[in-house]
Amino acid sequence: MAIQALVAAGLLTPPPGQSSEIPLSEEERRELAERMGQSPGKPLSEIIIENRGPR
Image (cartoon, rainbow, N blue to C red):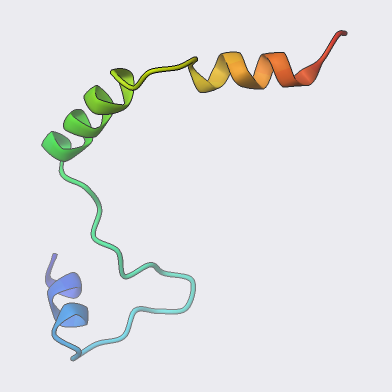
């Protein structure tokens, strides 16, 4: 968290290959998963299987 605060303040740049994005909290991930689970339509896994075609 300290590194993220320094990056956000412009006092430090992230090393190459590192993201400056702040990860979601456990609660934010739960909320997102719940919203995604309530979205209409087929699950992504079913769409992928259908797009593979006959075996």
